Length: 545
Image (cartoon, rainbow, N blue to C red; front, side, top):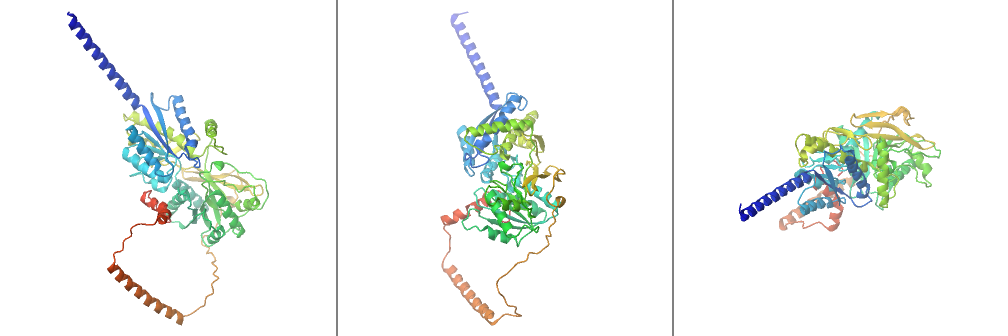
């Protein structure tokens, strides 16, 4: 064979080998890409939030590490790639998501968070549009329960406020109540108290319960808690409240001082986010007589116990003796202790010192990773891939699995069932509080524990809801069978003035076109959060909005 022909043949063979190797490398890269699960975590950087990145990140990484070490949590070859972005509690979450897609030219395979309602709403809509699963331990407002359209890809791994409303409904049925006053503080931009009360309102409204709804700003310099308590005296006998722990305590003290601890009212306290009292018992030492007043509070932050170490402790203990607290039920497994210690160690390295390092958000995002892994395995069995977001979302629903602290059950709508405990003061003299009852959300069952002394008449407090409050009116008035002369004169003068104003307005409208160019900056500031609630289409049904 001529040398030139042999050289040409060698070149052809070398080129084929190179092309073949390149093809194999491309296939390996494509397979690696297919098995890499890109997770975008959207949580606030600010440690003022219980669900900040600093608190939740160790839990997410613990879950990923556990799945990898177990060897059975993910299909062979699959791995998570975690990216963390500051969501704040507003539009930054949406901007972070869009920026990531624009820069990397690819969408994430899974979204974890956001938590805040106003941050979660636009992200959830984009997730549905892009067919990306979104798992969150937040977005707890009632509006997110409408999963048929824009929130179709959202799965909530923490009990929504409506689940809390279902628990309260079971409690009301136990006590045979059907009327309540909802009183809440609406002073923070996240409006957590507003959304919590909305969840209760929606559930109670479905049962045709009679409700009075009032709000106040606990940060106002002009707030008078005595006036608020006096207003409660003219309302319903069961009062549901939402405010910070210190405001709640001050309201309780004011109620006690106004003689409302005589058994005419019922109150409960709900602490959902407060990690320091998350399912714990509060012992005490001082001796006092018990009272017969109960409040329902949503204490989103602060210490829910009566004790502060101040001169009001004795009085507060008496006011709290018929206060019952509702918190998430926690079942602790041996693995939870290890998890808690690792989270604590990681958070402390960041300079955060707290009473309890694990709350419902920390647990929830850990369990979200486990839920996604289970759903992905099911989807792959049927021949789909990680890009089939809708299929993955479907597999997260109607599912019960083991979370870090116990069983987690997700309903058909993609919302976690809520299990709750009721804590009451079983020893008024010592001020000791214990778990006295439990609610199991999946079964819809409320049970009183048999091994504790229930503070109210064998587990049930009877209130005369039909009793009409006595309204005192100090304005002097006269009884008259008809209108006096001065009244008639006033009516005539008022009618003439009204007619004149109507005519003036008519000619003014005819001569000038009235247009509103813009609102003042102050009006935008005052109305911003309420306008955003409607225009951001969280779909609020709360009549007090």
